Amino acid sequence: MLALTRRQGERIVINNNIVLTVVEIRGDHVRLGIEAPREISIYRGELYDSIEAENRKAAVTIPKEDMEERLKQWKK
Amino acid sequence: MLIQSTKFGEIYVEEERIVFFPWGIPGFRNEHQFAIVPMTDDSPFSYLQSVENADLSFLLIEPFTVFKDYQFELDDEIAGEVGLSGENPPCIYNIVTVADKLENMTANLLAPLIINWASKEGFQLVLENVKYTTKHRVFPNDSGCEELGQSADESTTLTEGGR
Image (cartoon, rainbow over the protein chains, first blue to last red):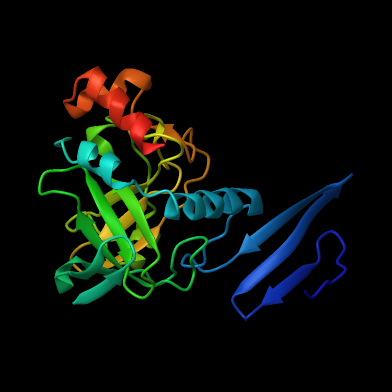
């Protein structure tokens, strides 16, 4: 991982089209501004982690045959 | 197209049921092609089966039959990335997790799958600043399985067998 030291108001430019700005530092909170093209998805890490974890769990919990037979009886 | 599936064995899936996920889905970034196969013709449930990875399948639900007031905003520019518009609205599915027993299955309303059936493209949208979570009960309580059209007795028996 590349680690850079920045002061408040300083920026990091990534790939010519993403700009991170350190907007504010207060105590142990850092406020970051992010400018990026719309197709770049940006998530708080813990939110993304929760989706990843739920997807991994869902992938190994598909219903067994007896459960499936019951689900099949449910119509829209 | 013939697809190898650990769950279903070798299955034939019509090309029109195969959707390209340009960004994969969280946790499975390198999986780009999935077949969406309805459980039955009129079921709200479908399976999402990876074309490339036989071991990878998910249970999906079309949310609006169960979560009648489910709604979220889809940013125009994000929608445009996969060719969606007012004239070509998306199909929405949510991934279901079956924990211990069927009655406790939950749907991930925080991260719906957005499918463009015209271009056969899809992605999983992660909603922000919404009241939804990754775990919404599909059946409101333990007796909810009556909605499946079975008597409570049968359900109990099947549940025990399924553990």
